Amino acid sequence: MSEAPEKKPIFYDRWAFRYLAVACLALIACAVGAIFYNHHPKPLKENRFAKRDIHAGSSRATLTLASGKKISLDAAPDGILGEESGSSIVRTGSGQITYAVHENAPGSDTLTNVGFNSLETPLGGQYQVRLPDGTKVWLNAASKLTYPASFARNKERKVELSGEAYFEVAKVTPVNAPFIVISGKQRVEVEAARFNISGYPDDQAIKTTLLEGVGKINYNNIIKAGEQSVNKKDSLDIVPANIKEAVAWKNGLFLFEDATLETIMKSIARWYDVEIVYSGKNVSKELFSLSVSRFDNVSATLKSLENTGFVRFKIKGKKITVLL
Image (cartoon, rainbow, N blue to C red; front, side):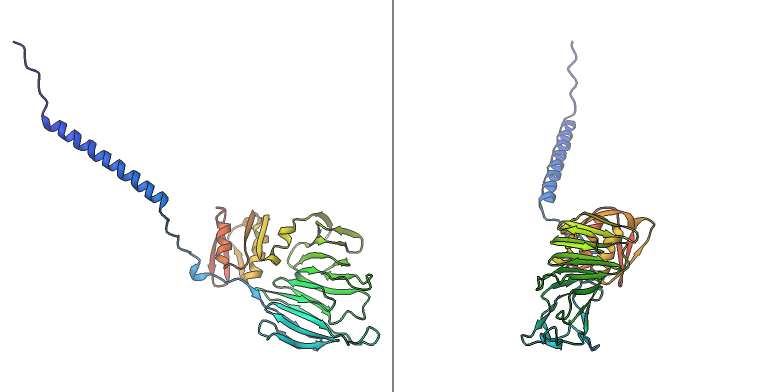
């Protein structure tokens, strides 16, 4: 007699089916979870700078008249602030003053004792002025512009700058009355032009960027529209300009292309009125590119730099520490 084939216990088949069913359900749950995670809005990460954030700068400046009187422009009301050499000094709005020359102002032959005014912005401040000849000047943070209250008696229109400013020089009659800017040991001469000068005392070079017109740097060096002069202690070079980067501050931006971290942090320090401390060696020499609004809190700018993965920051009071 042949032996009957051995029968396997039925519960083995039942348990195998149950394991298979559980595995399938687990795979389905994982797939649904993955779809939900990828399509559902993710919660925002906590802003670790939130409790220590620092607000951007604003329109703040001090005007010093020839008499020595000082006027805080951010607290002054709109309207006439004073009279100087045949002109009314008028605050026309937040961040702007203008010199309105009177129609019956004394001519060049009778005007005497023309005094000098100065407009000075603090750290975290900026301001705009329309000079007596119609020239418009935008003054960046921690900068000072000194100029005569009237150009009527002068064969040249000369002003002095410390820091950074953007100029739109007005055409005047006679046309041989050049507009001259003295910045440190540099002399810039134009007739009618648009240009930016950055010459902070703690920078290694004075940079003059010409957007329109022709100018002379230190009498003999011709600079044309689209060029930038880089005036260092022992050399002066004229190179093609990055116009957008040079005037970004005036247009409300931090814009840097392959700039050292030290250069970027100097601008941040001036605009947010903070102290910058470096925790490691050579970190300030790393090259970065940046494009953010100058009117965001400092955290937005710092996070943009942190997104590169090469640097981190810590804020404590008015001090920003740069970490490796």
